[in-house]
Length: 302
Image 1 (cartoon, helix red, strand yellow):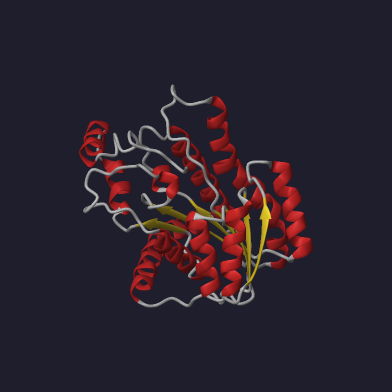
Image 2 (cartoon, one colour):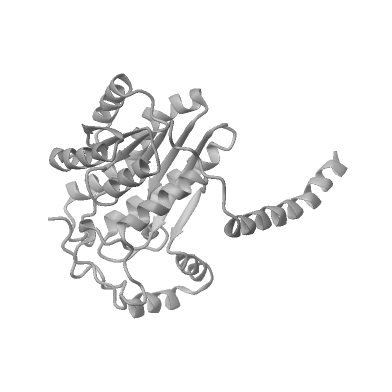
């Protein structure tokens, strides 16, 4: 028994080196892409912003069906018509993911009308954009319900069938603010940090579930109307991401079964600095980069 444990202990660092080497090779050599032609993809918040671009990208890459969830019918209709013109079957359902009963009800309606969902993209999110003391309590609750709890409800609604089929993928459009919070968006940062923990736990929990995987995407500030008015001090050095870029990289991550994706790659440096620098140094970085005051001009979605 002792020798067995000693052997496992000696083998562990070798396994780590092999896994790191394999990951390095995958960065150079093109990975085999998942064929989406048999997949039905459900995108929450799919009527506009990144959600609309995700629907387009999945359709462009050959997804069999696209299902859109959202709260604004006008946007859902427009996106649905656009996807259908691309030659892909598309349906929409009005659903507030922060409402548990509504999620379960509409999930049942999707299964009855469209069939099984094999890729669930949790994209829906809101941001209140105020400090704690200036925030309305109901607005704070809304952020947590949609950004965090909504993923609990949607995943519980669709994951069981994926496990039965041994075919499925759970995707979370998160934010780098889950790892490095800023002032003025305490509701969003908190909900995204909770969402990240949810996905990290879920990803590990799916290790023994063949055919079912998860992807978490953590992008930098993206130029959508949701964060309208947000200002970065050095936009030429830290330009906002384009939503179509986030969508393209997200679908690629799904097709290559990448568990976690930071966008752009420079965000890895931020994570490393946060791990090794003292708090005083991190505060100076926030002040220098402008992230300390970037929400002062925030307007949000109109």
